[in-house]
Image 1 (tube, rainbow, N blue to C red):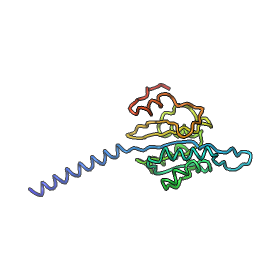
Image 2: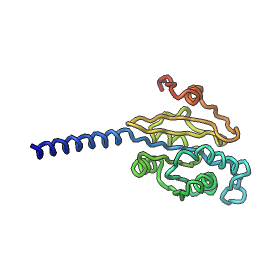
Image 3: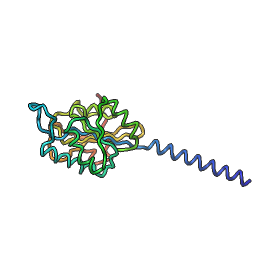
Image 4: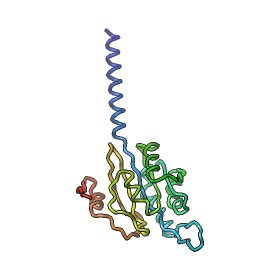
Length: 200
């Protein structure tokens, strides 16, 4: 009788453990931040890799301030010096070696979702790749593309239970020509706000 009771108890504990592990897997949240390079010197005349201006260096510090409590586990950058310098303050604070990516947009997103599920990741991209990254992550971009001077826009896509939630905010000194749609402003002020469904 005691043996049967032991097995019953063991089975219940095992079943409970499986339920908890499945629930944990279902509720894993992956957040990917996407930002364009900070302000850089125009070096087309000298054919050298552009470096950040003073404003760009200040923006890199503002990015650190914005994300320093987000427990970033990985940072992906292009091989451009401006990308490396944009990520440098946060990388130094979190002791992360930024990974230079050469993958396609979809390839990098697949790699992130495979290797960093349940973690927080930053991508520093050219301005014209930001919206494609949002789309590849499952978000619904509010505009087709960023402008080159949209330096202060920070995007995050939160992935949980096969759902992608996009948030947009400004960071650092104001410098943009593309305005954040009103629904995202309301969402940042009131996290419980649900943006209206729009047909595209």
